Structure formats: C-alpha cells, structure tokens
Image (tube, rainbow over all chains, first blue to last red):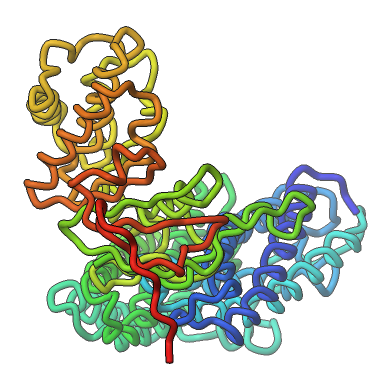
Length: 333
Length: 241
C-alpha cells in the first residue's frame, strides 16, 4: 500500500462511512419491522428519537461519499507517476483488477447516495415521517454496495505496487480496444453527436415542463438517466476528441488534468449533479399523493428540476465549447 | 383540548440511577380554562409540564394538541408548535443575565425572522402591559423579584401564545407578589388563554382562577379523586362497574 494522503483519507473515510451505513441499515431493519406511528409505545418513541440522529449522521457521511468519487480519481491521477506506462488516472486504475470496478461502483454509489439524500430531505419536510420506510429500505440496499466498494477500494490500494508496468489510457481507449469500450470508442462521431444533442433537447424540454407545470417528473427522471448514459458515451467517443484536439485520444480521465485546465471536473460535476437532481425529481414524483408532503414536495421538486436543468445546460455548454468554437474538426480536409 | 395519553417518563433508563418520573399519566386539559397540577416535590409536575409544552419527549405515551398528535413530530415541527402555541414561565424565571429586560423578552421571537425594529417595538409594548416599559434597558440582574417575574411573564407572552405554562410560579415570591402574579394570570385568562400551572402553593390551587385541579403523587395521577374545582371537596372516584 502506498502511503499517500489521498489513499489514507479515502480509506479512513470509507471505513467510517461503511460503519455508519451498516449500523443505519441494521437500525433500518428495525424501522421496517416495528415502525408504527399510531403507537405510543416505548419502542416506537425510541425509534422516533434515534432515526433523527441516525439520519443526520448518515447525511454527513453520504456527503463524503459524493466527494469521494472525485477524490478517488484525483488520487489515482496524482500517483500515476509511480507506475511505468501510466499517463493519467486510467494507468493507475489498471495497475490491478480492482481499480475500474471500484470506480464504477463509486459512480453508482454517488448516484444512489445523492438520491438517498434527496429522499431523506423530502422525508424531513413531512411531519409524520412520510418516507421513513422508503429511505431505510433504500439504505439497506445501499449498505452492501458501499461494503463492496470499500472492499474493492481497499484491495485496490493494498495491491498498488510501485514500478509495476501498466497500460496507458491511449491503449485502453483506442479503436483496437475490446468489449464495450471498443463499441463506444468506435461509435460514429456525427451520429453520436446528433444523438447526444437530440436526447439533450428532449431532456431540457421535459425538465422545463416540470419547472413550469410541476408535472412529468417521472418522465424527466427516465430521460435524465438516458441523457446521462448517452453523455458518457458521447464524451468518450467524440467530445473528448474535440477537447484533446486529437482524432484518436478518447480517454475520459485525461480531461481532469491541468493540461486541459481541469475542464473535466466541471464537466463531470455538472453531469453527475444534474443526473442525481433529475433522478430525484423522478423518484419524488412517486410520492405526490402523500398528504404531509402536499405543500413541500412541489417546491422541492421544482428546485431539483431547476438544479437538474441548470446542471445540464452547464454541461452542454462545457461540452459544446470545444465542439463548436475550437479549431479542431473531424471533417476530412 | 390537550390530551395526554398514558405518559411515562423514565430518566437514565437502564442505568443504576434510573428514575421513573411519570407512570402512565392520562389526563385531558380543556382549552381556555385554568388547570392546576398539584402535588409535592418530586411528584412529576415539572416533567409533565415539560412534556405537555413540547419541551421534552415522553418515554412512552402520546400528547394530542387540538386532536393533533405532537409527541411524534420531528424536532423542527415541534419547535414551531412550541414557539407559537406555548409561553413558559419557569420557577427560577430563567432570565438571561447580562441581557436587558427588553432583550430577554425579545429572545423567543428571534427565530421568527421579524425585523429587529418591529420586534423591539412589540417587545416594548408587551413590557408596558406589565408596567415595565421604563425598565426595558435595565439588566435583568438589577431588577427586583417582582420585576423579574413580570419580565418572565412578558417573555412568555412575546409570541402571543394561546397556552401559558407556569412551573411553581409563586415558589420564590412573597404573598404580595404571589397575589400580583395571580392577578396577571386572571387577566390572561380573561383574554381567552389556557393556563396550566404546576404548584403546591394553596394560594394557587385554591384560587378561584382554577377550573380543574389534578393531583400527582409519585409520578401517578391520583385517580382516587376526580379532578376538582378549588373550594370543593374532591369527589371520590367511582369504581368502574
């Protein structure tokens, strides 16, 4: 294991987050089995008191969970010099077989943790704990994912051996790569761009409809998920080429480097944050009928929709800048 | 109606110093009336007042305020109800030393977000209701016992609550100040406010102001006697058939 501040920070905080979420998940089992607001029993009142504290503590740790995705990539990027052949975070992540699975799980947990925070916030707006079962069920699902992520991350860090020969991003994200990466890298640029802007337009229209009328949240959530997936494909297959101004460099993580003005951070932050907010709109739309949320939910949904649409617009502007304004072109001379 | 259902309160539960302050207390308090909780020291009056006024949560049992269950409410909702519905007068007054009388009266209203100027004006008018307008800028430690008591009442009134809760309000007052306090309470009752007073002072529980007197003993409501109006002997409770 390499004693790097980022690695130590990620390891300690992941273990603390895991301990908190596992305890909260165990407590959640009790909530699912015994919660009865109509009862004035000692057990029920104890559950009411403890859920307030546990939700607050879990909220803080899941906020860390959100930031840990970026810290993980930043750490991988900052130690790539230690590995022969590594040019960026991708090289570090391929040092052993746990790097990319950890990254994918962190991405999934980023979205799920964000959604949990939204559900928890909505629950706190109701006087009768309207979403308490939903949020603890959600936490019970999230706990094993965070456990797996912590295990994978620990194994990844423990098996990082300096001076190991690894692959650079140029070979991993090249037209000769295999599997899904090959499909993405070799996706035809112009149709991919057309699909990207087409889905973006639909997403923005449905988002603006939620903002204007407060309706269509479920559809907006679904379209946001589609936009997220299409955006990742478009970023790797075509937008990255415009950012790097190279016709064959598809790395999704080099854009986080200083050579590209750290443009990757605002790009990914706006995409991930808007995705969480958009999916949150979709999730909350299922609870429009809850009486104690009649007042708070429409306002919260619109705020989330505004965040999602705002984030998507920022993301589109950041991606479109190099495509529309840069000197690089994919058209044959 | 404020309805307490099977309220139990245990302090330090599961520890060697566990103390059961209330044991399944059930009672109904009618609005716009004066209710007295009577009983010796340690009988659970203060604990029950705290629970009725949303300042503490019971270990088990529920409290309903105007048919709305309030003990399960998350703290942010409970704080709102406490602020808008209840005014508290504490046994030791609990005025904040170092602050002026006016600042003490204004303190409970700060979270409402009213502008400072408007709040100050309103607090001064409340102080004037109790003939303390000229003492607004005086530090509370400079006030006499009677003045401090009236500042405490003014503070309880700043959010215009419908229910006034007072815990042993005459315990530290001489007879003249106690009578003065009861006179203020009478005026508040005439305004349509609900008064809940915990006291073992005969001047309070035998007062004509009292509509109902509940007796507490060892954390339990004395069910051998019906709640009674002062001046009348409490009737023996009728055993259920």
